[in-house]
Length: 320
Image (cartoon, rainbow, N blue to C red; front, side):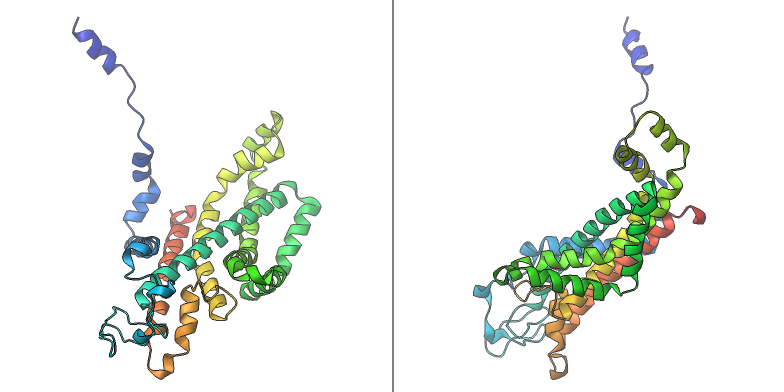
């Protein structure tokens, strides 16, 4: 009698592995553990992103709070007591007496927010237009691809500057500073959607002729359901790779626009704005105002870009 429950339990099928366990046993995670470059890049990107997210808890001061500023602390070198107040700062202060370490943490939040939002907008727009062009073909395909070809004839930064100027021009003056970040996201996103659309279109042209798509048509599936539930999951790998690399390019584009004075407003300075401010004091001896934000931008873009390069190689079936 006591052996019956044990026999019933032994006849049960083994429990299915959890999602985390399956991810740990996947080929992608195995390739990640075997790549020192990928691990270092991921740790560097994670450290910088977490530092920016936790800026209110890490930064010694809030550099964007006028009540916390002291102009007497201006131009204090790194780890050197100020001649007037006696205070010292890890990375020094800028012309307004703001702690450079705190401005980098808060400025990186804006750069990352703009980068992630712009790439997300470009991915959604590019996937939508690429699916339409690849699945329906005809005049829809010709129209979307001709628009993409025309946009590719201009550098992305010029397209972003043009879109930013037009959008800012139609925005009421009293709302320009509040809308500057969203206009910047729109400008960068609209300048980067083409590469996603071209990749998705090419993959859709291949997938729509396969048997599972034909079977979905036979059972009466609508084109929108076929594109979103059948074709899209099978073409996300190259999109993920391009999105990772585009994140680094979007962060650099935001810094470039802000450096040129057409990006983030002075009240919400990003890394590009900090570099533009520091560039004006580089040759007068206050090198740290430019040096540390520039190094942070370089480290952030390099780590994300190298992680994207590894992801591209890891998801490429020809290299396996």
